[in-house]
Image (tube, rainbow, N blue to C red; front, side, top):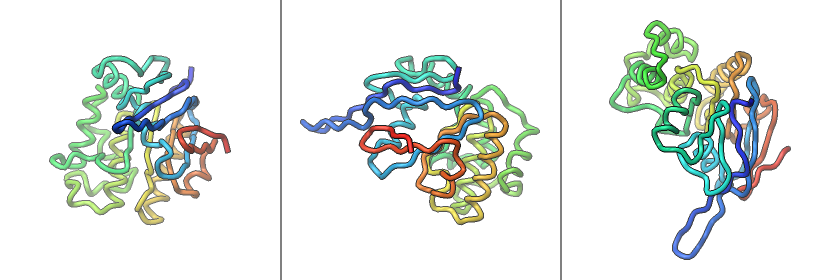
Length: 220
């Protein structure tokens, strides 16, 4: 059993009489401790694929399994439970609730995943270089700090699967290296990682590199 598997995913969008195929039969499997990078131009279907894998969107065809349990075509509450238990998600933006401190965001994620550990918050923040920012709000953080804070939230529940969309976009080289270090450390700990990126330096660290073009996945 792989931590995450997708089988023949199709996703269509309709605007008036125009149908757009965002995903065209995408299949993939990511093993425990494997880092898979996906690259592709804007509009290739990367965001749609991530949303389907995370159970945030439903494919029109095919299905997704997480830790051997079906994610697709289940109730929203069932998908949310499976996501909270096993999947960490890092989007390009919107990873932090503005009305909560950074520590509060991490605590919320831990509680949703039923793994709340008050003593674990400070060490996690220290790992991403934000040990002095526990009580800061997103508006008080720099762009790089927000990126690392979002990563801390995604990792806080110790998920078996990490799905990340451009985790190093619009950050400086030091922040990119810091994020990359944390990702590679989690790979060594057995986490399955699927990273959508335009960063060649990040992609070069992957065990496998795939490209997504016109909704179709290709091996590099």
